[in-house]
Length: 180
Length: 197
Image 1 (tube, rainbow over the protein chains, first blue to last red):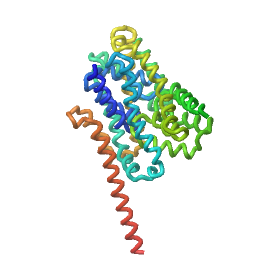
Image 2 (image 1 turned 45 degrees about the vertical axis):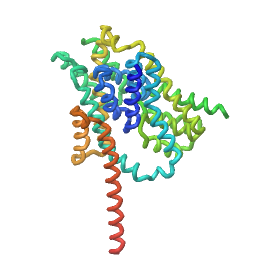
Image 3 (image 1 turned 90 degrees about the vertical axis):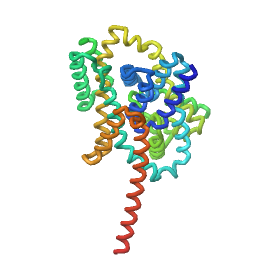
Image 4 (image 1 turned 135 degrees about the vertical axis):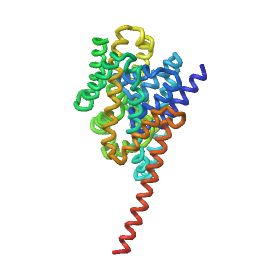
């Protein structure tokens, strides 16, 4: 019981402290902590990302809230996990805000972010790669053909049009309901 | 004046409740509320604070609310603003976690079919920003090796090697060294030019 809490806190401390580059870049970090540790399946992780996309708020918080509840089965676990992911950045940001002038032209920050940019691209790509599995695309050939078609169609809509991602998820859900 | 705490909380909970898509989508809405509507902060000041929030790890939306709350009302202000940002999505996801459990998704025939269709779309939603961030990061044929190597090493699931934290630290540290190096080279170069002239 207490062990679960400590593990959750340790996992989300890391996610909060090393979460650079926005929600999508944090996905592989979150995935490593919560899927590889066996708390949830890859499929459930994908579902949480979907739910997070369709509800307001950042994925970092949403995943903490959802997984905190699933792992501990209690509202307290959900609250503790959510606060854990927020607290270290909260403190760091507060400190940084007070040293804003010293901070602004800092070559450390400037250089570090230049170096992080290509890494962030790789982080997002790894999250996508990790989710391309049978749990998300089905085990049978027929099912796979359909899911791959949905994936390609969704990609084209998101990448080439200005249609909102939420609408894409809704359409894919309707497609799933009709086809499967 | 005490009111400002409440206003901070309410403004940020409004932003938290109605903004889909996290940090980047939130920036323009926060700017509209904080700079244009409430006129709490000048635009230039807002952009400086935004730069600070962006340079810190964690969730951008929360970090922005922290710096703005802090600027207006100190630490207590930043707590009010941060709780405002977090609370709406916390309550919403908690309700979903209670009612839409993993078992429900698996065992309810209709929900299970809907999610079968949604999962491949979610993967597509993650592939798209790979390309857009690659473009905005100015990735070319020479530098493409970095994201490709990072993605494959994390994907490899080899113990330790596949830990994303390694590449975040390496990227930041490498970028710092590279910047320092080019700065020194640049200075040296300028100095030489000056003596030549």
